Image (cartoon, rainbow, N blue to C red; front, side):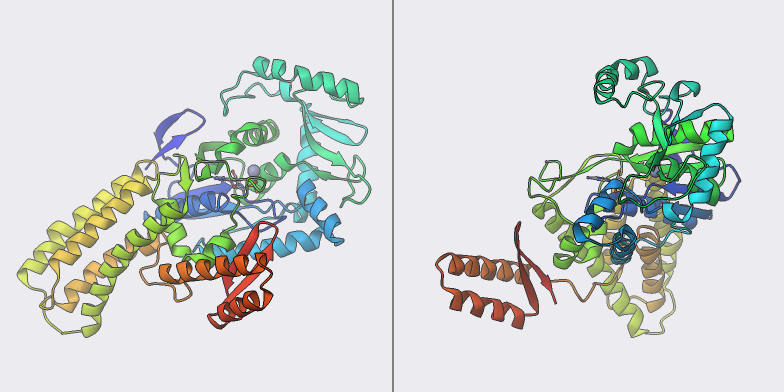
Length: 478
Ligand code: AMP
Ligand code: ZN
């Protein structure tokens, strides 16, 4: 398999550290809210990478963390007047629910920063002992210039970075926080502020920096050298660059042989953001669409290309996926009839000569830097082949062979089920629900509250719950 390595900016043949094994670390979400549809992209893409490597016989150790201590979590906990642990635990649970819906398999290990503090302290101490870090007033900084390879992943020159930081250096001086030796230095351990969670350390009460946790947890659960480190492209700099500096300075070995980064997901060609009102959680989308459609949509583009999300595009995915499901249904029908017929000579020929060509082409697409877009095209061709090659006279044995192949490629490798989820709302239903909601909004505007309530009751009778929010009316299936 060839993988585009961000480090070398080239497609390279994948050669694991230990033959037959693959250690993969994927940066996971910060758990302060429901995951959004952009967060789902790396989850689905790298889950597919894992599935594909397993299908090709690798023993995969897949590690993906939850960042469960962070300013955003603390802020939300303070807003809700609860402990930050309650926030992180709640959203880890919610994230796992979404992952399950999207058929993203649980990682071999899902480490959490707050459960790994002793190991974090150990790495910080190692870095101090080796001269790569220093403490000032309870903060430990990484001495960036002590690591000669800094900038190699993001292809940035350290002196250009330095000039980019000049303004920051100036601001630091103004704000009196000029305790760093160099503006390029970054935090490994930060001292506690009132109202924040903290742990005891040799440098006083405090908590680890974000970059540190991935260096520590990947070393603990995979080892000093990872085969593949992955995440969204926004993480290349500074997060992954800093992870490399910390890990290679501490471990004195290559941190990761391959770096994979997914492109960003946009909504209607714009950056997704709460203020633009185009922000969707996975939960929002999966209430309207079968999560399998979302997974199919994500894989319909190669992972490095930018991906645009819109109502039209997800509708198109829904229709496309139907073609695969219909093909599978036809085969399943023949299998279930179990007509006991022997394979005909022509069926034998199709199975031995034609069917393997589709599998080979599917594998070739996936071997080319996980080109799921091309792999899905091959699945469509396979469905065309099975549709054309089967009829009421076909043997069940033949249909079963075809079904099993389709199942392996679609369900086992891409994680796209061949059966429909019962909970999905049909397109017609969505249109009807949206029409009723618009009618209710109009009724409310005209102060016709009796009608508005009547419409709400009618929707409720249809099994639809609506909620008035600041961003407008939201609905879901009860
Ligand atoms: P965060 O919780 O922001 O650290 O993000 C978790 C993962 O989602 C990281 O790998 C991010 O790079 C990725 N991510 C965040 N937003 C998007 C987006 N719009 N498109 C694709 N990936 C994203
Ligand atoms: Zn990370």
